[in-house]
Amino acid sequence: MQTINLAEYPITYGIIAINIVIFILINIKKLNISWLGSSYIKSIQEKQYYRIVTAAFTQKEFLHLACNMYSLYNIGRVLEHMLGAWRYALCYAVIMLFGGFLSARIHKKSAPFTLCIGASGVICGLLGIYMVIAFSVRGFAGLKSMIPTIVLLALMTTSKKIDSIGHFTGLVIGIICGIILINVYSFGIY
Image (cartoon, one colour):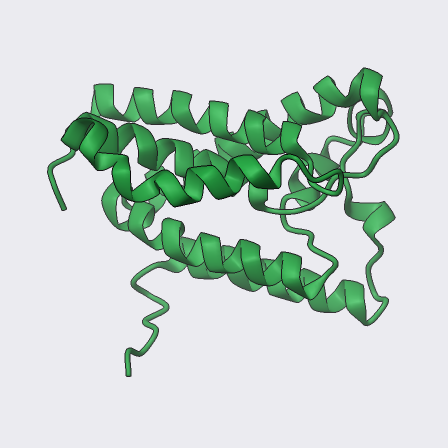
Protein backbone atom coordinates (compact mmCIF):
# COMPACT_ATOMS: atom_id res chain seq x y z
CA MET A 1 0.00 0.00 0.00
CA GLN A 2 1.34 3.41 -1.02
CA THR A 3 1.59 6.01 1.73
CA ILE A 4 0.87 9.68 1.11
CA ASN A 5 3.87 11.90 1.73
CA LEU A 6 2.43 15.36 2.39
CA ALA A 7 5.83 17.02 1.97
CA GLU A 8 6.23 15.59 -1.54
CA TYR A 9 3.26 17.53 -3.01
CA PRO A 10 2.54 20.29 -0.48
CA ILE A 11 0.61 22.57 -2.83
CA THR A 12 -1.69 19.88 -4.23
CA TYR A 13 -2.40 18.35 -0.82
CA GLY A 14 -2.85 21.80 0.73
CA ILE A 15 -5.41 22.81 -1.91
CA ILE A 16 -7.26 19.50 -1.45
CA ALA A 17 -7.31 20.06 2.33
CA ILE A 18 -8.72 23.60 1.95
CA ASN A 19 -11.46 22.31 -0.37
CA ILE A 20 -12.39 19.54 2.09
CA VAL A 21 -12.50 21.93 5.07
CA ILE A 22 -14.72 24.39 3.16
CA PHE A 23 -16.96 21.51 2.03
CA ILE A 24 -17.39 20.37 5.65
CA LEU A 25 -18.07 23.93 6.86
CA ILE A 26 -20.73 24.38 4.17
CA ASN A 27 -22.42 21.10 5.02
CA ILE A 28 -22.49 21.77 8.78
CA LYS A 29 -23.97 25.21 8.00
CA LYS A 30 -20.99 27.28 9.20
CA LEU A 31 -20.42 28.73 5.69
CA ASN A 32 -22.92 29.57 2.99
CA ILE A 33 -22.54 29.22 -0.78
CA SER A 34 -24.06 32.69 -1.18
CA TRP A 35 -21.01 34.12 0.66
CA LEU A 36 -18.49 32.20 -1.43
CA GLY A 37 -19.79 31.77 -4.99
CA SER A 38 -18.75 33.99 -7.87
CA SER A 39 -21.12 35.78 -10.23
CA TYR A 40 -20.84 38.78 -12.51
CA ILE A 41 -23.04 40.88 -10.19
CA LYS A 42 -21.33 39.96 -6.92
CA SER A 43 -17.70 39.54 -8.03
CA ILE A 44 -17.33 42.30 -10.61
CA GLN A 45 -20.19 44.78 -10.45
CA GLU A 46 -20.23 44.88 -6.64
CA LYS A 47 -16.39 44.55 -6.57
CA GLN A 48 -16.37 41.53 -4.27
CA TYR A 49 -13.26 40.16 -6.00
CA TYR A 50 -12.49 37.72 -3.18
CA ARG A 51 -15.35 35.58 -4.55
CA ILE A 52 -13.24 34.63 -7.57
CA VAL A 53 -10.87 32.92 -5.12
CA THR A 54 -13.41 31.51 -2.66
CA ALA A 55 -15.54 30.05 -5.46
CA ALA A 56 -12.57 27.98 -6.67
CA PHE A 57 -12.36 26.26 -3.26
CA THR A 58 -16.10 25.66 -2.84
CA GLN A 59 -18.06 22.49 -3.60
CA LYS A 60 -21.46 21.75 -2.08
CA GLU A 61 -22.27 18.17 -3.10
CA PHE A 62 -20.05 15.23 -2.18
CA LEU A 63 -19.86 13.96 -5.78
CA HIS A 64 -18.74 17.42 -6.95
CA LEU A 65 -16.01 17.46 -4.29
CA ALA A 66 -14.95 13.86 -4.94
CA CYS A 67 -14.65 14.29 -8.73
CA ASN A 68 -12.76 17.57 -8.45
CA MET A 69 -10.38 16.39 -5.74
CA TYR A 70 -9.69 13.08 -7.50
CA SER A 71 -8.88 15.01 -10.69
CA LEU A 72 -6.73 17.49 -8.78
CA TYR A 73 -4.94 14.65 -7.00
CA ASN A 74 -4.04 13.06 -10.34
CA ILE A 75 -3.11 16.05 -12.48
CA GLY A 76 -1.88 18.25 -9.62
CA ARG A 77 0.78 15.83 -8.40
CA VAL A 78 2.12 15.32 -11.92
CA LEU A 79 2.36 19.06 -12.58
CA GLU A 80 3.71 19.87 -9.14
CA HIS A 81 6.47 17.30 -9.76
CA MET A 82 7.21 18.64 -13.26
CA LEU A 83 7.02 22.37 -12.50
CA GLY A 84 8.16 22.47 -8.90
CA ALA A 85 6.00 23.75 -6.06
CA TRP A 86 6.33 27.49 -6.58
CA ARG A 87 5.74 27.46 -10.38
CA TYR A 88 2.81 25.10 -9.90
CA ALA A 89 1.32 27.35 -7.19
CA LEU A 90 1.80 30.39 -9.42
CA CYS A 91 0.08 28.66 -12.36
CA TYR A 92 -2.78 27.56 -10.09
CA ALA A 93 -3.25 31.14 -8.86
CA VAL A 94 -3.08 32.65 -12.37
CA ILE A 95 -5.64 30.17 -13.74
CA MET A 96 -7.93 30.69 -10.74
CA LEU A 97 -7.79 34.50 -10.90
CA PHE A 98 -7.82 35.14 -14.64
CA GLY A 99 -10.07 32.19 -15.50
CA GLY A 100 -12.49 33.08 -12.70
CA PHE A 101 -12.55 36.75 -13.66
CA LEU A 102 -13.12 35.95 -17.35
CA SER A 103 -15.85 33.47 -16.49
CA ALA A 104 -17.68 36.00 -14.30
CA ARG A 105 -17.28 38.68 -16.98
CA ILE A 106 -18.59 36.42 -19.77
CA HIS A 107 -21.62 35.56 -17.61
CA LYS A 108 -22.64 39.25 -17.61
CA LYS A 109 -25.39 38.79 -20.21
CA SER A 110 -26.42 35.15 -19.91
CA ALA A 111 -26.41 34.57 -16.13
CA PRO A 112 -25.28 37.66 -14.19
CA PHE A 113 -26.78 36.47 -10.86
CA THR A 114 -25.85 32.77 -11.03
CA LEU A 115 -23.29 31.83 -8.39
CA CYS A 116 -20.60 29.55 -9.83
CA ILE A 117 -18.52 27.32 -7.56
CA GLY A 118 -15.94 24.57 -7.83
CA ALA A 119 -12.32 23.83 -8.58
CA SER A 120 -13.03 22.34 -12.01
CA GLY A 121 -12.22 25.52 -13.95
CA VAL A 122 -8.73 25.57 -12.43
CA ILE A 123 -8.40 21.82 -12.97
CA CYS A 124 -9.25 22.35 -16.65
CA GLY A 125 -6.47 24.96 -16.70
CA LEU A 126 -4.04 22.46 -15.21
CA LEU A 127 -5.13 20.01 -17.89
CA GLY A 128 -4.38 22.72 -20.48
CA ILE A 129 -0.83 23.10 -19.12
CA TYR A 130 -0.36 19.34 -19.19
CA MET A 131 -1.64 19.12 -22.77
CA VAL A 132 0.78 21.79 -23.99
CA ILE A 133 3.75 20.15 -22.24
CA ALA A 134 2.78 16.65 -23.43
CA PHE A 135 2.38 17.92 -26.99
CA SER A 136 5.70 19.78 -26.88
CA VAL A 137 7.52 16.66 -25.69
CA ARG A 138 5.80 13.90 -27.68
CA GLY A 139 3.58 15.58 -30.29
CA PHE A 140 0.13 14.12 -30.84
CA ALA A 141 1.29 10.85 -29.28
CA GLY A 142 1.56 12.74 -25.98
CA LEU A 143 -2.11 13.62 -26.18
CA LYS A 144 -3.44 10.12 -27.01
CA SER A 145 -3.83 9.06 -23.39
CA MET A 146 -5.83 12.20 -22.70
CA ILE A 147 -8.52 11.55 -25.31
CA PRO A 148 -10.96 9.96 -22.80
CA THR A 149 -10.49 12.92 -20.42
CA ILE A 150 -11.01 15.44 -23.21
CA VAL A 151 -14.14 13.62 -24.43
CA LEU A 152 -15.52 13.42 -20.88
CA LEU A 153 -14.83 17.12 -20.36
CA ALA A 154 -16.60 17.97 -23.62
CA LEU A 155 -19.62 15.84 -22.65
CA MET A 156 -19.79 17.40 -19.18
CA THR A 157 -20.08 20.88 -20.65
CA THR A 158 -23.45 19.96 -22.14
CA SER A 159 -24.99 19.76 -18.65
CA LYS A 160 -26.93 22.85 -17.56
CA LYS A 161 -25.62 22.37 -13.99
CA ILE A 162 -22.00 22.75 -15.09
CA ASP A 163 -20.33 26.10 -15.75
CA SER A 164 -18.88 25.28 -19.15
CA ILE A 165 -17.69 28.88 -19.49
CA GLY A 166 -15.62 28.43 -16.31
CA HIS A 167 -14.16 25.21 -17.71
CA PHE A 168 -13.38 26.85 -21.04
CA THR A 169 -11.79 30.00 -19.55
CA GLY A 170 -9.70 27.86 -17.20
CA LEU A 171 -8.57 25.67 -20.09
CA VAL A 172 -7.61 28.68 -22.24
CA ILE A 173 -5.66 30.34 -19.41
CA GLY A 174 -3.96 26.99 -18.71
CA ILE A 175 -2.96 26.60 -22.36
CA ILE A 176 -1.49 30.12 -22.31
CA CYS A 177 0.42 29.26 -19.11
CA GLY A 178 1.64 26.04 -20.75
CA ILE A 179 2.89 27.90 -23.83
CA ILE A 180 4.76 30.38 -21.63
CA LEU A 181 6.24 27.54 -19.57
CA ILE A 182 7.53 25.57 -22.56
CA ASN A 183 9.11 28.72 -23.99
CA VAL A 184 10.89 29.49 -20.71
CA TYR A 185 11.71 25.98 -19.41
CA SER A 186 12.64 22.79 -21.18
CA PHE A 187 10.77 19.65 -20.28
CA GLY A 188 12.13 16.19 -20.91
CA ILE A 189 10.18 12.96 -21.00
CA TYR A 190 9.33 11.97 -17.43
